[in-house]
Amino acid sequence: MNIYNFIYSFFYKFWEKRGNDGRIVGAAHVLFSILIHVLLIAEIIRDITGFNIISLPNFGEYGINKTMYFFLAVPLWIGLWFFYTRERTKRLLKDYHQKYGETGSKNTLKIILYFVIPIVLLITLAVIRQRS
Amino acid sequence: MQAWFASPDPFIPDATATQSYNRYSYCINNPLKYTDPSGYIDKPADWNKGNSGALYVNPYFNAGYTHIGPGSGNHWSDQYRTPYFNFMIGSPDGFDRIYGIGAWATALSVITNPNLEWVSGEGKKPGIYVKEVKYHFNGWKGDISSGFTADGESEVINRFIPFFGRENGETAAGQGGASGDPTYNNVNTGLGAFSIGWNTKGIMIQGAVAEARGISMAKVNNISNIRTLGATGAGYMKVVKGVSTGANLLGAGMTIADGYVNGFQAHHAADLGIQAAIYGIGASVPVAGWIVGGAYFLGDMYFQSTHNGMSITQYYLDGKR
Image (tube, rainbow over all chains, first blue to last red; front, side):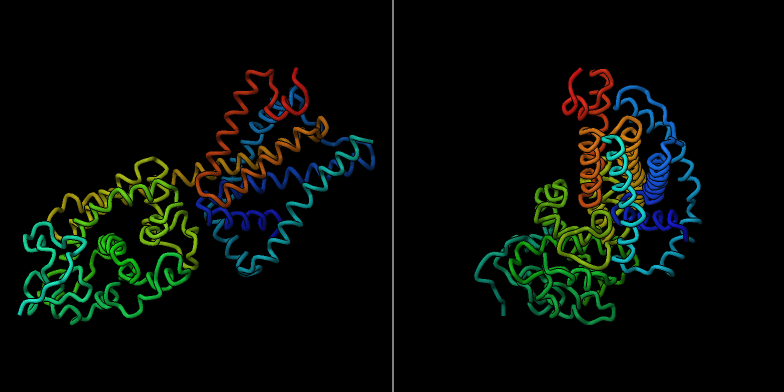
């Protein structure tokens, strides 16, 4: 199970328990983590080589950027939602239970490693670069 | 021999039976035929002869009930999840406040188990008790209604959630373990989402009571409609919540993306904090998360439209232009 399927399964379970549609939220988490990972890689390359491999469009103000990026992300979100079909979800959850069981702490640590640390690292590196 | 109580009953067992209005009488003045261990409702003398077991778990008589009560932890879930689970709920303390719960429980048991065979010494369904408590149920309507509309904060809803299934399956405070009945989960989340929860629940309960009494098949038929409606509403609600939570998360992603493009500033940190807070609220407080998230999203969009595309945080933290 790759890390994105792991993230999907983890958050699917997490949000289904809380009455949210696990497929929709799970797909959003996957998209978010892909975005963070790609930006982190781009940031590391940018820090080392000075070359920006991702040139996101700038629509002007922060608020407009945020909104426009969001609308650009929606098709990807829907795509992932279609990708994680009910059947695929069922299979992934089965794998998840077999490989990782129900114990929460280990899986939570993995989520922190895959999901939270990249965010912190990305922001930290970007801020350091921008201030230097 | 005719036994009388020294004080009046706190409620009238059967609104349609004139003897019930004599609140000092014992078993409608027929102690040879009925017993009244609880002091509240007359029961057939041989009420406990039968094989369904239903009456054995009646909260008024069950020996194991003494440790069951609101806030008593796993005892709820450990014991009410039986075919007759609703009978398990009760507490000897403050009994006059418990019978109403029993009333609801009785009614709901009938829904949950439409083929339930009740045991009665007279060959009648113990729906007679349902009939009796229907009167009290009506008397409790105000309390229960306020409980359900208080989003789980009141004492009443904490008591009642086990019967209907917990909000979102498992978040009722003080009760661990098993989730509630999916049907009632659906009714809770679905109908609650579309603001018809209480009214429909009322119909549902009345339908259940009617079903138990066998007097109104029309109302009984409503039950299945309501179940369908509840399930549909719950499905929509899940999607709304899911979209809201996912959009909030992706909003955080877009904030980070803008920080990558234009440099991180104070408003980025503020927005990430707000989005994290909304995420946390959504994870811990049912419904509130998507309401807060949606309100913030719409508010921010409106703000941008009136402030040259600047978001709320940008406007206040990084200069007004």
